[in-house]
Length: 437
Image (cartoon, rainbow, N blue to C red; front, side):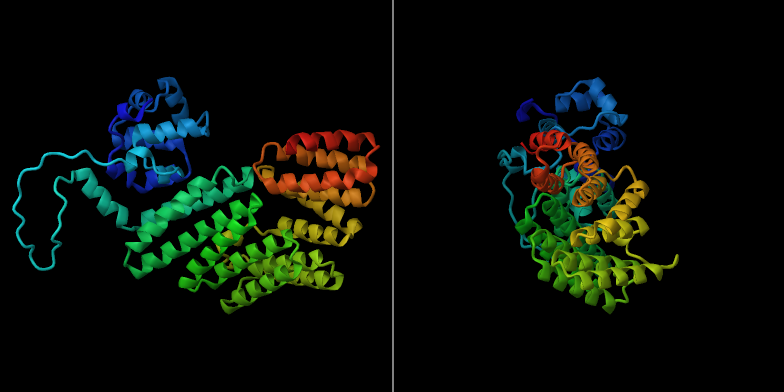
């Protein structure tokens, strides 16, 4: 469908609705179409005509059956319903950049504006535009709740499938939040918006880290630090430093990883960091020491993590973003750190125990942990068992968008050179090569 033949699109007041903002940021087209019908009067047949879809396809999407992920279809929806590109994580559409056709205007004598009013007033603004301007810069508790809910949804989807597909929407929402932050004067709302922007910047950095684009990831993590520093959110600063510490271990910068983890602990202590948070940060330090092959320091950091974890109480006011660090996560992280040290006899049962306990929906996490189990098994010369385990990690990697997982499996392929004549190794090497190609 050419852009010149599209319908006028959704009303501006609907595009400024917090529900629509959240649905677009998540690319939840079932909700977008439902809102278009309920609040915009766009029935399925009208949506279908505007977006060059069949009415039956629109009806199925509204029922939540097929997920729309094809970029060409997403662009058609953006153009057909006139949803600005940034709301769907797209570049600005051509119709957004196009000049408004000049219209013949009556001669107007401009009188001096009364004191306190702007001299230049745009004539002809319609009601939708006026409402959009007002709503787009007005922050309400509902808007904040909607934005926070979308962040939680992003993290859930990142855990399940990886962050590659999410990144455009997250970047678009970060741009949106920074825009309304500039127009918001209320100090309470500004603090909340700074916190939301910091979370979105960290999530963006995480998606680049998972894609092994470390320089770009570091830039977004640094932006997240600055935003959190604006509101002196010490626990969140610790959280971002922990991300940077983990990235440093992947870049074989063990001393940087240790320094960043310790800085994170210092930041958390300034705000009376909860035991769960301190346990997570201690494990990040353990990863750094394990990467440096410092056995004594690794065990000391693991011991501190376990001591912190034992002090967790039901009433602890943990930040939402650290609640993932439960007993299963502590167990698997301990196993990974010990595996890095080469202590396979201790590492293997811990990782296996965690895999049995962790949610089956966390596909990326399971892919990582299954790889680490295979790695410890191979270190113990259990070649056939290790290859079978790595095969399960490979199955998960095929449905998860995570270059980090693929890179781990490529490392595993290199480790199989010593067993290149074993039938199980030959078959697995072939499968890994196909995935990486």
